[in-house]
Structures are given as structure tokens and as C-alpha cells.
Length: 381
Image (cartoon, rainbow, N blue to C red; front, side):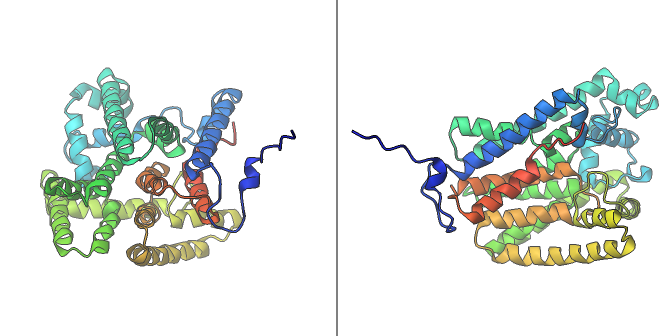
């Protein structure tokens, strides 16, 4: 009796772009690629004596948890917009409440003293623990997989480049991402209460970071005037009412002035871990010494992508593609968009994986792009 050798897994593949006869899934490819990047990164951190981690972080030994603690510091006196803060009032309300946990002495000693104090460390720990708990809960609620697959998915996301960056900075974008996540999951829920909660969550996300307003386009796809006007009304209340804590309409004017001033400062460089379209194109201009001309091209391309993204999100059939497009708009359109903002794509990634996609050229391209966005890449050290 002659035994035939088993076929290699690659022999089961065809290259015709159709679904392939294989036990391998797109999910497995995602896991393998992400875990490979994570393992390589950990090895490189050991080899470089820790220096490689700065490929993902700003190489400043004294700016850990900087975004949260500076926001708390500038809200201590209750006048954030007079101090140049650009955050919308929702973010300032959170920081104002957190600032009440600090003594006047720690405030007078400065930002570093506030952060390094015992209460400072506790506040930061509570913030990180509460956000990661909610984030993991939403991931596990959304993802349709086994326990082992959920564990592996959570692991790859928590060790991804944008989340490591978020942990190092403790930016309030994590709260905004969670709010957007709640909106995406529950906007079509059969319960009226959960739908209202979804609208409040989107409004809160906008009150924290403004640009998640793009996700509201998802309601236009449903062509439900009741949902659209309900969400708009909720958004107006949640966004503007907190301004009365910070000077009313004068606070709105000051916030806009601060945003324009900050934009003019950071619009000249593609550096600084910013991932928006304009600054990404600016990097190319800096490399090839094109200067201002390439920046104007970047600005024009930004508007073109904005219009195309809106139109395509309305007419694309798959919901996950619409969510991906609108999430990318929240990242690419702002002049200053940190890499930790990539976490807003987590719901879209899981929506794609939940479709149980077969191994086709198109799906392989999609998952590769997701991996490149989330992979913790360490090249130096």
C-alpha cells in the first residue's frame, strides 16, 4: 500500500481571486501577522536594552502620561481656554473634575509634581484601568469568536502600536473611542433606551474630540429623519451646554482661536507622530525639499478625500467599509492627529472579521492594511 503525501497548505490555494478551499481564515492570518510583529518587537526591545520602544514613543524620558496630566493642570483654575487649551468642553469637564483631587500645593509645584505625586499616579492608574476595562468589554461584546480567539484579539489590540502609544500618553482620545464604539454597536438596537444611549455616546465623543462627528453620517445611510434629528439635537445639547462652565459663548470664541493658533504651529511639519493626510504628505515634501508647494497639494488632497469619503460611505454596501471610511476621515482630516487615534478603527476591524471573510486577494489586502495600521513596528534602537 502506497501512502500519498499530504498536500501542503499552500497547494490548496488558487490565485483566481475567488474564495479558496483552505482551513486557514483571514482571522488566523491577522493573528499570525500581529503576533509576529509583537514577538519581533519584544525581542528587539531586549536586544536594544529598551531603546527600540522609542520607535513608537516620543524619545523624551519625562513626558509619560503627559496629555492627561497637562489637561488636568490647565483645568485646575477653571479657565482652560484662557490658557490656550484646544479641547472641546466635554474633555475639559472631565479634567476639571479630576483636578479637584489635587491639592493647591501640588498645582503650584507644576505639572511634573502633579503627575509624580501619589494622587497623580492614582488618578492616572484609575483612568487607564477604567478605559481599558470598558474597551475590552466592548471588544468581547462585538467580536463573534471563541474564547481563545477573543483572548488573542484583545492581546493583539492591547499590544498594538496605537494602544501602546495611548498608554504612554494617557490621552482622552480613549474616552472618545469608547463613546464612538458604543454608538456603532447600539445605534440600531431594538431598545429605545440603547439607541438614545448610542446618540448620547456619539455626542459625548464629539464633545471630547470634535471630529467623531463624521461617524454621524452612518445615520444618513439609514434614511431615518427621526434618528438624524434626534442625534443632532442631542449633540447640540451635549456639546454646547458645558461651555457655560467655561465662560459661555466667549469660551467658544477662545476655543476656536486656540485651535487656529495650534493648527498654524503644527501645520508646518509632518513630524511628531501625526497621521493626518496633510502632515503625512508634508513628510514627503521635507524629504525631497519641495516645501510649501507640496503642503498646498496636501491640503487640496485632504479636501478631496473628505468629499470622496462622504460620498463613498453613503453608497458602499458593506457597513464595515462605511465605518472604516468615516473612521479614517476622523484621523486624516484634522491638522493634528496623533497615532493613538488609530484605535477608532477597532470596531471596523472587528466588523470585517465578523463577516468571516474568505481568503481572496481583496480580503488579503484589507487585512494587510489593518495589520500595518496596528502592528507595533520597532526598526531602530
